[in-house]
Length: 388
Image 1 (spheres, rainbow, N blue to C red):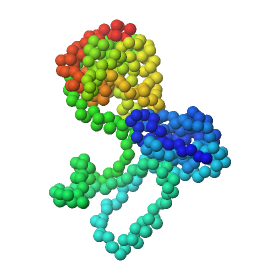
Image 2: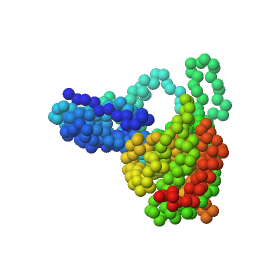
Image 3: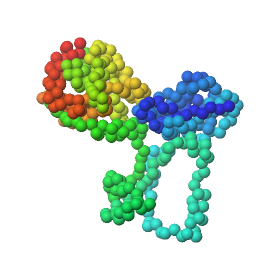
Image 4: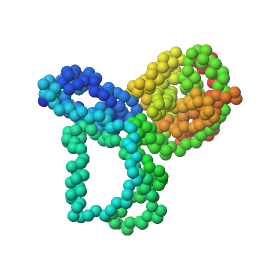
């Protein structure tokens, strides 16, 4: 008897997952709780554990396949012989390489009613056949598709009201793309899709920004002396400032303000493919030595894409530091859901660095932001106390 292995929901926001690799081969014994595969979620690569003892059995979804949560990607069999002989499709994931540019399409001719069925049959015969089981295992993964630009209509005729053939107008961006040069559609990574969803969710937050030039030279010297990263030291400075201005640790909800008693700082990190925010817990209340140890561990997990949802969720305040890029004069950031503010820190210069505080106007106001930056300035000038 075989039991289906389905794509698991490994986080609250996960709707699809990508099968990175199988750790076992068909016919090999597996134990309950043993890691049998690696699944890429929207922000991390996580382990898929066996739910019972048995033998891994095909057909298995190909490595690189994307599938929605709940879709079958393999099986666990009670019988070793049955598992070893089960059909296993050998299908590689679609190549990320761009296909060759096709010739410009010629104007299509009106189809011949008599020849229509014959041409359809020829097309069907030429198409590769895929078994229903394999089709199910492949999920929604599709190769990149080359598009040719088509002239955008200048004054399209509006369909009659109530007409069955009426369709929504093409988005402006789509029309602009089609009016340009040839292009191809390349599927965004899971992380980039997650970032896009978060940015859309943030777009409705009524926000404002306040920028100040603050001293960094003293903090940089103190952090180097104690062998702490500047980003970690800035997170500590923010958390200490929030203790004096607790509104910046709150979040707006329909029922009122959610007041948090612990300062958890989400720190924006570029992992090469997108942006993720590992969260340091209790940044104001713990020692710098403890925080440094946690921060080093989080950064290693970012590199290997092994952060768990608990490690990148639930921040009460956010920090984005682009100070390592000397060309960055100033910038601002979008406030993530569940926070009242995010601080953007640009490159340090002799006169100081530009700090831009983006705030949720439902929680704090301009004068609150100004007072926050004043207190932050005082904390930056006293790194001995700050980094103790």
